[in-house]
Image (tube, rainbow, N blue to C red):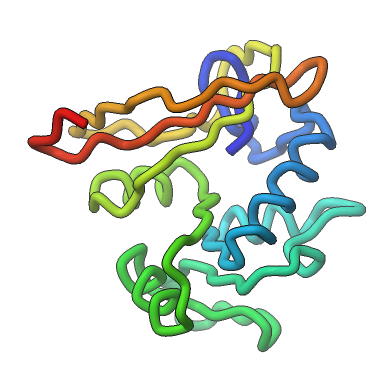
Length: 170
């Protein structure tokens, strides 16, 4: 996930124009390596409106989470009704790992359900006064262990975390 220094993944309007193009290339590369990408419906719709970039170009199986029964996409995508449903669909296709890229609500659902093992954040050197945060507000605490820090470009720092499971000191 790409974000501002203060944790915003998009403007209030959903626009991500403050993020550099390099983030899309990093994201696409990781999705291709993992082979399965799970996104929320709103994220899918926002990215589909971008000029020059879209999920169709990413060489990975794509699963979109949507509770809207009328939501239609081309046949190369699967639709899941929840984070757990999306993970089950990925497992049924033989995937042991997936890349999740949702908005704050999808990200929060995955973290609260204990479905995230690692978090990779690409931090852009910008501060936004408001917008959409990486995680929605809610009643949860998740501890992380820093695995790696990389400078992936002149302006992007990548933070790689392991999610500590409840009652785990590792």
